[in-house]
Amino acid sequence: TTTTSGTASAEEAPFFPAPRSCPFSAPPQHTAFREAGGLHKVTIWDGSTHWLATRHADIRAVLSSPSFSADVRHPDFPLVHSNQPEHEGGLFLRLDDPEHARLRQMLTKEFSVRRTQAMREQLLRITDELIDGMLAKGGPVDFIQDFALPLPSRAICLILGVPYEDHALFERHANAGTDLDVSHEERARTQREAFAYFEALVERKRREPSDDMISRLLEHHTGPDGFAPEMLPVLVGILVGAGHETTANMLGLGTVALLVNPEQRDRLRDRPELAPSAAEEMLRYWSIVSTDPRRVALEDVEVGGQLVRAGEGVIVSLIAGNRDPRVFGANEGESLADTLDIGRDARRHVAFGFGSHQCLGQNLARVEMQVAWPRLFERVPGLRLAIAEDELPFKRNSIVYGLTSLPVTW
Ligand code: HEM
Image (cartoon, rainbow, N blue to C red; front, side, top):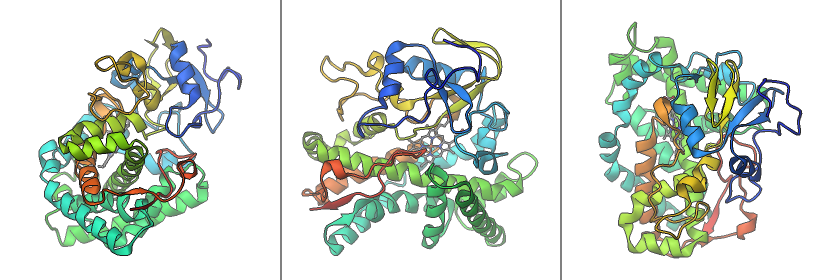
């Protein structure tokens, strides 16, 4: 294996991201790398080469080591697309500790287990409204547009104090930010449009504060010890975007997994108390974040027997780690890492990352899934796909894996 950045040939360093040729499995390339062990070089869109970590233990090692930086402004950082610096430049969450931790802790209370679990009733009401809407319309409907997208969208809007009526604008922004087939110009255009919108919104909250997260940030966490005031619209945009594309894709994919594995669906319907473990298993099974996390080495460091030199980039394959048989191979001797088993203990998954940058919104995402699936299958027990399984339009080239639409009926 080569240890010098930029010298590997295309054969030695295949293109990243690699496709999931079977929509329900890790990219075969990542599986092969994982089973071979060690780190492997991959080439990204700008021609630069970086290490790919695929084993669960190596992923955790990279993400918890202070030898690696998450700062996208580092000149050797493996960027996902050309608009990355514009989008994330100066984004405090991409800073390293202790600065990152100092800023992040101003947000953690808003997404704590207590706060998010306290939203259960509200989320249940939204879930019921969305189900009522689907039933009133009559099948087939697009489950993504009618359920999977509006539930997390309305939840994050409630928390932040963003008017949900404007969702078309921030959905465009969230989508252009994650779809790798969108052009540089188009992505830049939606970024400008969203920034102007969130700037005006923050300004309005400054004049007329209410009981929401933006108003609390303005009151308590802006200024010399907190966030720079000009960063607030960027922060709000990122939280709205992160609150959308991720959980919406999980809700769509998880529903598909339950529809094509009816024995798992029946298990959840008969034992709704399995909802928390079902949510963890879905996170593990789908591992929707396809191109993150990425890091750059600040010093020479060994991972999985491979010397990574200072300045070399490392990308981790969350799905390869979450299907690692060394960790998820056997559960009471029966379930294998590639099998969906909503009763297993999947809590060691790395779908939310690991270490100090582990997902800020994880408790919110969890409660949304825990509420949605049992209610959905309780109220619409006959829910089924309205197209053939092999026609499901899975996203091929996106930062976050998911479905572009999901026609269902009942
Ligand atoms: C970070 C996944 C939902 C906000 C992350 C990371 C992953 C992830 C893998 C780590 C990135 C890294 O280490 O570089 C997911 C998944 C979700 C989800 C799978 C849903 C199922 C959400 C939601 C929010 C959110 C609902 C809304 C607030 C964030 C933020 C970070 C983050 C702000 C950066 C944290 C930091 O750098 O300290 N997420 N996420 N995520 N997520 Fe999520």
